[in-house]
Image 1 (tube, helix red, strand yellow):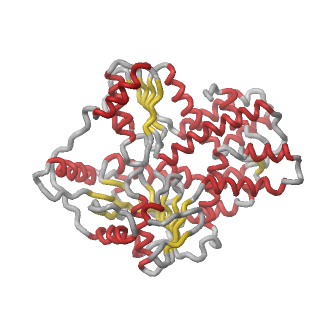
Image 2 (cartoon, one colour):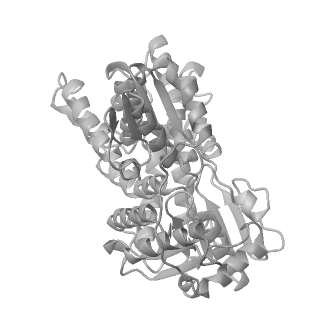
Image 3 (cartoon, one colour):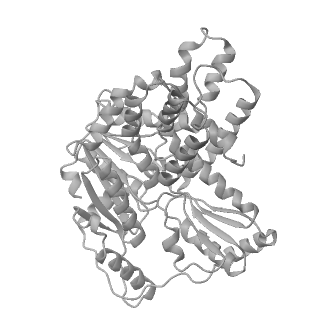
Length: 497
């Protein structure tokens, strides 16, 4: 692959779920190690499967990969990072402040905002603190599916900017003292991401229209964040062995059509095409073979592609158990690329065909449900939870409601609080809660983001419920200050908890 011959220090592999990011990241790490480089392979995916691919048990510290000199790997563990982050902030006050205050501090730092910033701290150190990875020549990041990765890579600029403009000294995570210590690290992270001599973003995709469209969208958003050194890899291009196999030919034609219509935003990128491997990509030998296939030709045939018109029997049986209730919430969940969106759309269309009122929506920032459904039947509405739009609407609502009774100084502090990157998480959670609540009057089909992103979203439900319960049973201490943005959705926006 082209980027191996002139690899930058940092390599990011990102793309739609199921396109082969982990396989490509692992194969690249192996290839660099075979060239005599010292390589650290890091997964930022909460649902990482590096352990399975490399055949080694990994933790939150670099672990040498057996029989692969020069290669170490690790999983970025958000929960372990959050525990360490909480202790960094709370530890100095143990034995100094009353135990009840210390306990309150720990509870306020137990939410999913803390989980996110702690994981982000670890990511920043790996990317921008030269002392952390001084023993390695390259750091290869196997990222979560696109939406989660866009959020992760936007945080350096978001938190750095928030700290620069903050005047109150507090955030929804408590005092900014804990973040100020990281301020230079965040600035270094922004610098490293935007330096083409230091960082390469590898957009992994498939020869499929939806995957290529998401790659283009991600490319544009990441370029806006300053990550402009990008390389496109089209993975697993199917090659039929027989021209009289209609299914194989249809798969080839679909790939050919998709590649012939590569989105304009990707057309000028350096591109590598890899054929579909005939074996599981597990273990170092298989990963080496994947790289060797990079130079092979990919041949395609022409035929007509089909589409899924009828529900499989298994899904019909599931719906038969659900429909007697005439209402409810159906979530499709799983690893990226397994077909969540397709199944969600098929279920929603079938429920609408049976005469039910159905709302199909998605928590996946990629939002492919509209394209998957095509022509929307009667009784079905299709939407999405757009993080950007939800955040702007949430900020406006909080300012109109909670800010109405504040003086100029108080309103300025509230506006500052709402610029915190945590506000997006709250807004998205609130929209998710509203969507779920619609299941009381009809059917809601939720196409979720890949597993790791979805687990974090569902965990936010419990985190906010715990915070609401805590706030209703005790007075809020003066330290650390509690974000109005954090409390507002549960107390005043009608979120069903």
